[in-house]
Length: 102
Image (cartoon, rainbow, N blue to C red; front, side, top):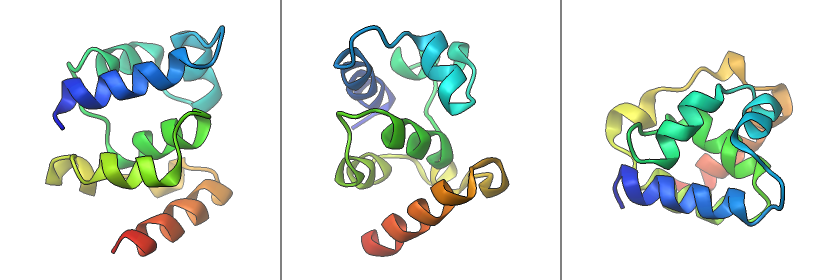
């Protein structure tokens, strides 16, 4: 799965929620909608923190989807995460899911 496929998967999950625009999603998870658009178009690969925020917010994606998507990130994207930027509850969920995957 490459950046285009990851982006398409995320776009499909966003479109499954009626009325969820890129600007609204960006506001809800604290990521610019410009970056989200680049991710959906396959122009940018999300880092693991952004990917977790997207999977946690998008109802069509589960923690198993997150693990499958992480497996296809390049090593640089896997290592880029700013845990301090994530809310405490999200940090705990992310650590638990990653521990399960390893």
